Length: 355
Image 1 (cartoon, rainbow, N blue to C red):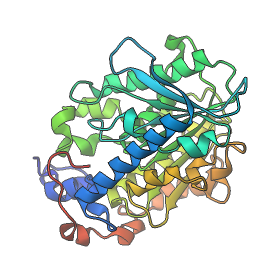
Image 2: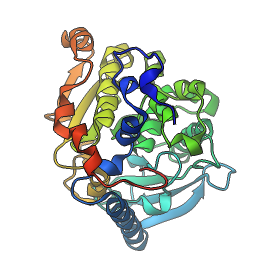
Image 3: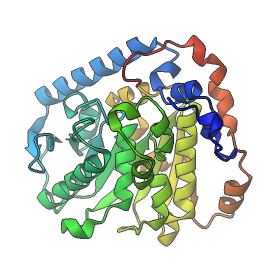
Image 4: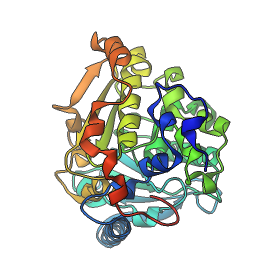
């Protein structure tokens, strides 16, 4: 692997000053879990997802394996509230797994609490690497959103939620050209959970063995770099950027810097607002496992769709803090102290795909 500390990158970008080993640590979420060992945390996450999906399929009205395209992997599971309604809000979830693992068949974490509130939940499948390229995944997710809008044109709003790699895919929907899909989705909100929004660091980690990203690929698919060009279809749509306390400093940086870009650029074209939230005492996996809970911040979509924003760090694009914050914020954020990299060597190492 490339030692990124010696290739002449600008010092103002923290990850470019790291050794290859430290960069790998930063982008291996299971190494930052403090409640369990790395392998056990992954097993627990998978077991909770499988059990939540089993319960959802057994207890909720659903349409399973509905094709949104012609590809074998292009399917969605749709879960409905018990009480039928002509128009429903729809919550679409894109699973994580570093674009190379995970499945809709183990990702129905939030179905029970959301359908109980009258919200339909759609779990989206896409072709993970190495079968699918990142460009293909973005296209598939875009078509899945368009499919839901076309199938349920009277919806009360479409809310996109993604975790980790799924948060990246959800964020790419801010850049989508809906005209070529013949529909403008009724997008009302984005929940971006512990995501990666600038993919350049991934090029220099073991994650890229399966992804095979070039630097050009990474830049083309980095919403952090592209969101300034976005034209919001609905200025009332909001974005909530969330990270766990025990996510790595690089995951914190990715979420914070993406949040900062939003009000300063895209959101200033309308009246959108973005919010940032660090969820206390949770790690990269627990933050999604907790979506099974009715009182979780991310399962408060209905009947008051933007309750998650109340009381959270939020500013409009007209805030005088914007320019000052972007220019005066230290190169290495103060939150680094909350999850010190000095502890990484004490954490369990994970073999194979580092999640």
